[in-house]
Image 1 (cartoon, rainbow over the protein chains, first blue to last red):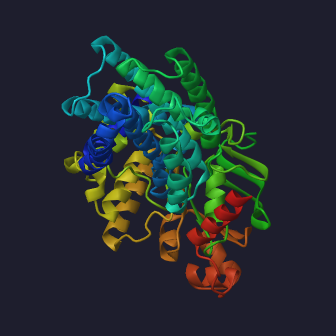
Image 2 (cartoon, each protein chain N blue to C red):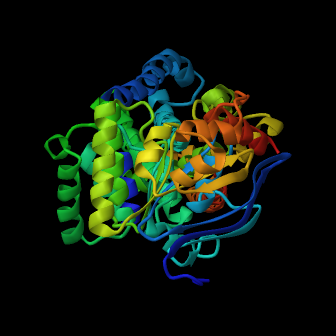
Amino acid sequence: MILYILWLRQIKRYLRSKSRMIGSLGQPILFLVALGFGFGPIFEKAGGGNYIQFLAPGIIAMTILFTAIFAGIEVIWDKQFGFLKETLVAPVSRTKIMIGRTLGGATVATIQGVIVFIFTLFIGFRPTSILMSFFALVVMFLIALLFTALGTAIASRLEDMQGFQLIMNFLVMPIFFLSGALFPVDSLPSSFEIIIRIDPLSYGVDALRGVLSNAAHFGLGLDLIVLLSVVVVITIIGAWQFSKIEI
Amino acid sequence: MSENSTTIIEVKNLVRNFKKIEAVRNISFTVNKGESFAFLGPNGAGKTTTIRMLTTLLEPTSGFVSLNGFDVHKNPSDTRRSFGIVFQDPSLDTELTAYENMYIHAVLYGLEKNVYKKRIEELMTMVELWSRKDDLVKNFSGGMKRRLEIARGLLHHPKVLFLDEPTLGLDPQTRNLMWNYIKDLREKEGLTVFFTTHYMEEADKNADRIAIIDHGVIVAQGKSEELKTQTNTKTLEEAFLALTGTDIRESSGSVGVQMMKMWHGRK
């Protein structure tokens, strides 16, 4: 019940901020259209096949990454605008509060991912099977959980939004650009591939490609194992950081 | 622990240091059941730090606090069920409606549906917000938000209500109204009220007993009359100034806390 109410709060806030909802869809749609159609011909000439088919799972993952990190970072707002105090003096364990919030944020991020997924269908993306598309929901939710928990862990340590730019430029952007969302990982220099293999989003992107386009590079099994383990570890770290918040 | 069954808050040798700052230095006091207790002091004197320790938000460096018979440090859950709080800064979710804020509180405190439905209506009617229950809180005025916070703080029938500068920035009408609710509740429910304020006449009028804290030390406590007699002054304001001096404090309350937090956060 407590998890539900904290989850519901995130969902209600999301549904009420239409501008934020629409605003955060602008970027992925721009990426899809500009990169998809812009690089499409070259990609095909180079023998990579249909670029939209390749790019769509990457952009879905990007949408989830950004929305999820934002949802986690919202803890700072709650610290500054007070609602966090209300939850922290309630007779509820901090871990429950953190998990409820994270589930809510992850659900919101997944919904955004689904909206972008639907959009990709309109510009020519064709998932290999409808059944697997439902499985993609699970993958999306895992990615969402991972980054909501990461956002929460970071936000628990910060006092205000001043560090936000730092987080965007030195954490979120690298996670996105080094995940193989935009380019194939097959024939990269090995030192560069190591970096990509360290990035947890790479496995999310790869898993989505696996279930939607049947084109996993690392293999769906490995992707899921890595995603699940990182989700567990980051959630534990997030819950621990959250439990140390003092206001 | 309950050497005296009328005691509801007991504070013994409470200390809190932030790095090198001694915010609260070895304070002791008790608050009796049903009492209205004012905790006064200049900005940065340690009022909010003390309230944070009494309400499980901050761990003391040393010392003992019990509330409603529970050791605050060892048993935070039962302690939290025993008190309600209106913070110095608003703590509502402004993107939600007034009713939703109440509803979340009810669920967080584990109230049954048939219980909270009735209580939410009663309390929101009391603070004259029932007709606005489905409005988003962001459209409320400062006074309405405060009233909603008071209603919310009372929803789980706490034994103690903490009010940290509850009337800051409110007009005299709202202040008056607020203290009237609280008076009613004390008479009806035997609620204990622990509050801080900078308005001395408010403390004079609404507190049974007063403690004055300065530089983290309690410099005087007793009934308003006793403080006036002790300092040989006519008003509580004069007594307050006689006890705490007329120097302006270098840090305002919230700035002080912010700085402490920054130092604390940086390690």
